[in-house]
Length: 81
Length: 201
Image (cartoon, rainbow over all chains, first blue to last red; front, side, top):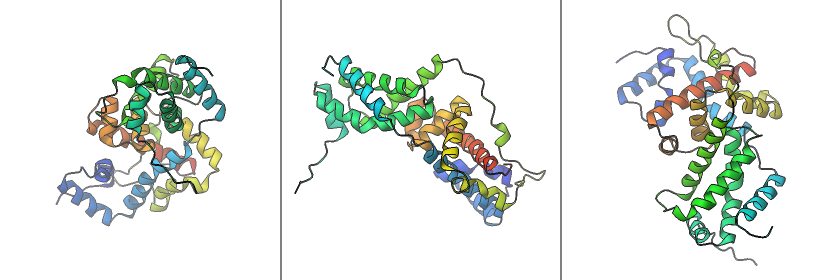
């Protein structure tokens, strides 16, 4: 089986996690990661990144903007405020 | 006792709104305005998001009669919002962003990760280690520093949690291209978070 290093393994992560990585590469990556604590740690932080950024950017629509949006759209539709 | 009534589906509301039912239109607005605002903040900026939001629902109102239900209503609406955000951004003079390449992972001569496992994992604890408001501010600023193509794919795929196929459709590219862009964005943002908590990526 083909051996891979951390650097080439990193490039396969997205496809690996999406389940579209060809079986031979998948086995090669699994084999590498099983013996590489650095990759285990790296993958953990790679997987957490979307959640961290998602939660940090989860803004709420302020009430005053809800009010102005509704008023704008009513005016556009020729409705009373 | 109040008996809960079944909520009409988006598609039902869309059909009613297209037929001129104002309440149905406002119900759609109610359901989606928060999500579309959040998307607009992520794709443009807090300053531009209100305009994008307004433009999106104006277009929804105009184009509802042509919504044929070939895709889910939410997908259709997100596509309108994404286009409105991208148009809005194109109209703005972009200040050159400070590149994020410095945050890509580093390897030694043998292609091994340069950091120790503890260092490599630390980025995943950014929310424990940083003040929530600081992290929120930094996260908003850093997604604006991503190259546009990476930002769009990352926002739709990872922040709005759309499927890769839907993102590909919305952006007019192949799924493999979406995956490649999202991957680059994840690598840069992971490294950025790592740097924020004190470890060079």
